[in-house]
Image (cartoon, rainbow, N blue to C red; front, side, top):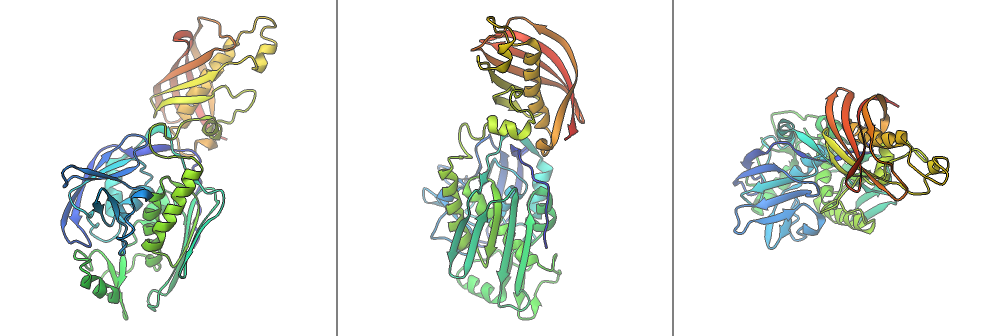
Length: 444
């Protein structure tokens, strides 16, 4: 089955609006666990904090912290000797809901397993907490050349693709599972409807082996689908005919979160599992570093000119903003325009006495405000900004070649697709122009 959704070219980093608590039983340890999900600043990524340890150990969800010696049907992270097991479901829920920055306090070495073995309980908690844009664009790991991993009979590939797509094939000797294939473009909508409800599963023969190894102490027919030679042992029926392969997609989404940035590409997996997904995540993390597109830390993900051009339709000689240096979602924006003698308007305005036309100062101010307005909608690259009114425009000083214009705009009102902003333009800290701008957005 194929699913295709509209691609969101530009989006902001996101976190949750309000913290929430998630409690339950660890599926392998059987221990009671309490986790607290907290909002986190731009560039944090997802960080687990072992608050049961003294001192507290922070473990970022990144490939460099994968514990290679602890791959037992789950994904384990380790830092400074402290481990946290079975993180894949939390990571998948965050990835699927496009929550980029999150701090998770946990009082044990394994998160609680959702009550039904899917991640829908976590998804509903994230929805209830709400998510918010953080004013800085996300940096994707864009697959520009194929990345592949082959071992045993497992195949994993990442191919160039506009969006995020996963195609997965599983092959089981169990006649009830057999060979299953599923492929879809993943965004929060398709994740919630097609992937998040799928439950973790195991063969009965594997259950017996895992119990002998001291694992799945918290596992039951309530939080996992168990298959024997006669079919599923659970009273509740399958949620999808191909629920098994869908849960494998959920798992690989969680594992590939460790690559360090949301992926723009097509992931193809054949007969894979955690012990193969994780080396593949490390390959992708290295690819991210090679491209020098770091997703975490100070300065991560800026509104540079390439990102601006993804949103704005303007081009030479009418693109009049070089960089956005601050953006508070739906509230305010600060942008920069570097004015050089090479500007084409200086040829005629005026020969021998170059001054930037006042109307173009307002146009540049409007473009900065347009980015604030466009950033408030999904798929901003599909919209245009029309300015419908300019009030209280004043021009206090001339703008000359070599000046750097700093535009500061505040959102006064935003109703549906109409807004009013108050803007000021500065050169060296002095106001050179100001105006109130009213605008609307329309489909291209």
